[in-house]
Image (cartoon, rainbow, N blue to C red; front, side, top):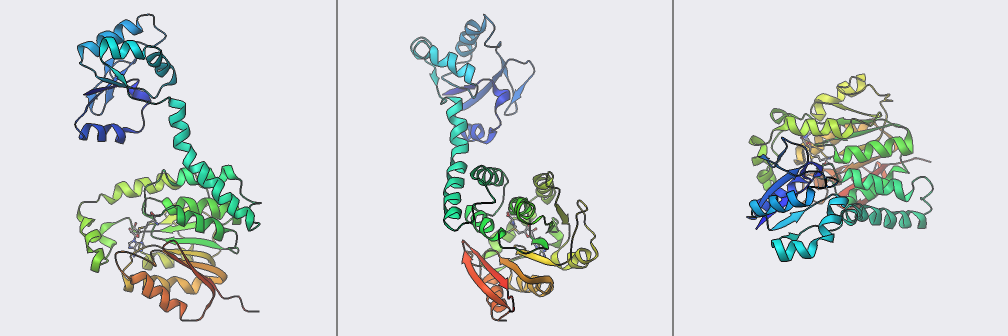
Length: 349
Ligand SMILES: C[S@@+](CC[C@H](N)C(=O)[O-])C[C@H]1O[C@@H](n2cnc3c(N)ncnc32)[C@H](O)[C@@H]1O
């Protein structure tokens, strides 16, 4: 089997073709601009489909390169292949291996739209639908899922509900990684509260302590991860959000900087009163306990704290630390959604 991808310069989902190669199928790209590369190899040349020579040259290229399958993400090219599908198969032994490109695009978007519609229906039943449209929910879901990370759609749903109940004040996230939850928090903080989000993470392997126990399997990755690449993706993830900044330090070292308003990213307004605190840094019991001890006193009355991975397959640090916090009696609402514990600092009447 040998797959020809044309035009290869339109393809962004390279992982798909890398996987196909890993599965033993040779993949070669073709382009109408000369000197192109695809998957680290020189691309073949084919004229534009508007060129009268296109079909003859295409036949020559597939024959002389022993091509068995063709893939295209271009609707015009697909139309030509579809029109000649019978001839392709019968005369050249070549099979069209891609769906109609507009269907592919819709399939890619549809799951986010369906998710958005489903959530919107639920928001509507609670009377919470007035400030967020279906399209906005779908867009948030789609862009959030483009960012690598460790937050899922259950987290996004819980944050969308909660965002409507957060008082005025800063949003702070401890542990941002690539910026997946930060992206959602940043959008929600500006959409519902006109608030700033301050992300805290050392993005430096020397500053990150082991999580130990069952999480030792995760700690073992520390030596091979290039954190500077994670940091580069984080900065890009939040770069268009004008209300989001970061402090590149451990949560302990970041607290005085936050209180002084010293940020490593954009200068954003900060009230030094935390309205929402997302604790998603080191999950070792001692570290979550420390994050809580340092940061919880700065959460305002009526503000919320979320302890991520309260339910966690790799340990019980967040659960034990979260339970200890609950036992202080300083919270009037607490619930678990997905893997996360949410608590509201008691409003005294
Ligand atoms: C579970 S990941 C965060 C996932 C992220 N919120 C997401 O949505 O994908 C944990 C992050 O905590 C960071 N971290 C580890 N120790 C920390 C500390 N002491 N203070 C702040 N962040 C820490 C790590 O660098 C890592 O990026």
